[in-house]
Image 1: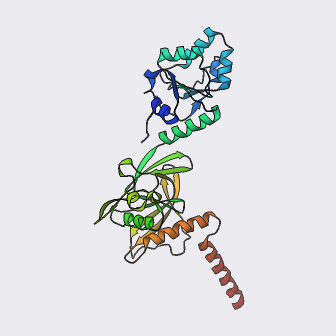
Image 2: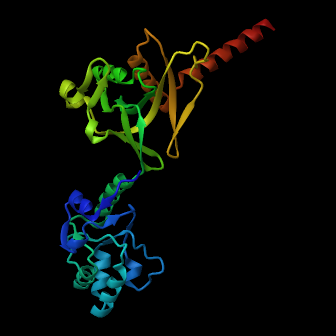
Image 3: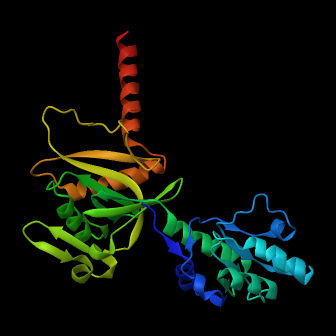
Length: 312
């Protein structure tokens, strides 16, 4: 699922000034890439990215001022296609009258910002990437534990929400319960958040729906979090072999990314909140270069080697 963005959304989000083309504010924006039409101003349109927001900075405006009015109008009319979302002028520069004329004829908005071109480009790109990123919904609970986005998954009734409640009581922050919307912002980043209708809410069987922010304060929740690790809760199976050392590394594929996964068996008496909390701390420690399981295995092998040499 991909969210849609209109020129009106972009205008309101970045507080852009509308110069002309109000009729085109509902034009869709389908890509987060921007275009700075320098080559197009010279007449080269072979690779014109017409579906991108066209950004004009000092360079483009200065170049157009050196063109004749007729030639300038011709170039701008060529830029105005059915797929062109909008023109955005940075640094509060004056938009060329030819651009305004061509955009008005094509009913394409011309917007203006006070920001410098580079900074404006970053803001526009970041906003469009966040809105146009592909999104999937996953059943689970997302919690911010020591700065890590931990997605707790498992079958219905296994205790995900109750575990999240205990984690919140221990000072961690709830992001989403039951339905987690995950979007891929780039090749290395997955961001999880809650649907608006259930934001800050937890469903506890026997108790009902509670508002975590109302009960525990604003510090107990956050709106979104980068997904770092997945913890899968499953009912204890006595016939299944569970990793007791920590050398096995599981992965779960979300979009085209492999996310580290830990499987935790559930049975009466196990404090799942503490286990998940320690799992998050241990994951951070591994990223810092220390792996307790590998260190133990290495020490054990060294001890076996020493004993073998003594026996010989």
